[in-house]
Each structure stands twice: as C-alpha cells, then as structure tokens.
Image (cartoon, rainbow, N blue to C red):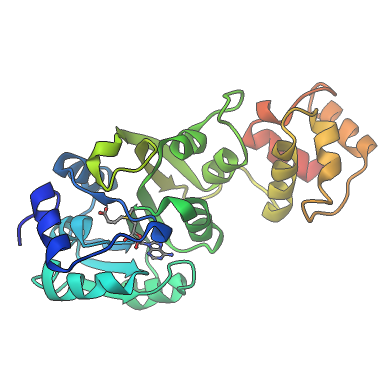
Length: 288
Ligand code: SAM
C-alpha cells in the first residue's frame, strides 16, 4: 500500500470512496511524510509497544504505527471511514484492531487490560481539535496506564500545556497537564500539512507521564478546584478569585483562611494565581 502521507495517494482514496469530510468530527488529514515520521520518532515506538490511536481517519498515521509497534488499537467515531480502513488502507496489517466508537465513551482501562495486560501503552493521535482537552484530561484523570501521549493539537493549546508561571499562556490547563506529565513541544506544523487545511496553526506535543506526581497531595480534586477558581478570574488577586470557588462547585473558603495561608507561604496578600507554581498550589491546597 502506497503511503497516504503523499497527497496524491490520499486524494485517490478519498475519490475512490467518495468520502465527504465531516466538519463536526474535526477531520483534517495529515499529508506530510516528514511530520508523520517526526511523530513516530518523538513517541519512540518500538516492537514492544501497544499503541492507542485516537481518530485514525483514512489510516495515514496508522500505517506507520502498524509498521513500528507490536500492536495498534485505533478508535474512530466516523462509520464511513471503517470500510476504507478495513478493506483498503490497513488490510495488509495483522497487528491492528479497529474500533468504531466515540473515544470519550470507551472503557479504556478495560481495553488496556485486555490488550496489554494492564501495562502502560503509548497514545498517538492527530486529535480532533474540538475535544482535545476532554480527551487528554480523560486519559489522565481516569488513570489509564500510559507511558506517553504524542499528539497533534492546536498550536495555542500546545503553548498553554507547556507554559511556565508568569507566562501569558500559563493557566489551569498548564497546571493540570504538568501535574500528570512532562510536556515537550516536538514541532510546529503549518496548515498546508493537512487536507483540508485547518484555520489555525498546529503543533505536535509529547506528554511523558510522571512515574509519581511531582508534588505530594492528599486531595487532587480540591487542588484543581482552587486552580480553576484562581484562573477563572485572572485579573483578580488570588484572595478575591478564590471567593468564587463555590460557583465552580467547590466548598466555600473564607478570606481570612486564604490570607493566613499566603502569609505562611511567604506570599504577598495581593499575589495573583498566575505566578504560583504547581508546588505552591499544592501547599495552598494542603494549608486550606
Ligand atoms: N489520524 C488521521 C490523520 O492524521 O490524517 C485523522 C486525524 S483527524 C484530525 C481526527 C480524526 O478523529 C477524524 O478521523 C475523526 O473522524 C476522528 N474523531 C473525531 N471525534 C472522535 C471521537 N469522539 N472519537 C474517536 N474518533 C474521533
């Protein structure tokens, strides 16, 4: 099978099956072999690995994954793509399982147990951008056994995931991602590497899972409530922003308690959440 990373081969398949792109599924297929090779290299796929691919599309990256991994499971929501994958682009491979499902509804823990005896798997995807955050946070929060996640996302989202305190892109997503993993932006990818071209720039980011959380914390949920409240109203001081925690579904806190905690941590009473590190949010959460 000719590589689909070559635009002419992708066009041939699309025409053969009269495929119509579904905007609601965030379908932008990769048509650049260099980008595909970069993703495979960044994920460090070997013949030992089981790889979960989210949204294989017509199977462009899946072909590379099948060549390089021991076993690949590809989860695709669009039923119109399934015959293309099964009867055509992936038919030569015997190490692939195609599942026609919504990734957000699939029991991934069970899948990893069945296919990889519960051992950590690698996730590789050119993600549908409309659900990037729920997919990634779902993988983390459900504690799916993972080694790394190497994904194409919107450039702006990759920047937010990797941002450090004080940076304009730093926020709740940076802290959530960095609590679970170490982010590394592998490459920026322009719109002309996709068919059809997206309206935004893209980037490949690798998230390498921490073996244990970088900060000791008794109540993860509470720390993330504090973080969401702190960044929900970025321009307020942390003391004032945290007063909205109840609206975010958390237990209310009183101002005096926050003031006392900040004092104990050696932070100013007028500090804003955007300069606090993950360690500092963890300490604040413990003190409150
Ligand atoms: N991997 C292909 C490539 O790189 O050319 C396609 C990537 S395209 C950006 C995203 C793919 O995810 C599409 O095939 C789309 O149908 C699929 N998709 C969208 N939402 C999904 C969901 N909830 N669960 C599984 N797949 C989904």
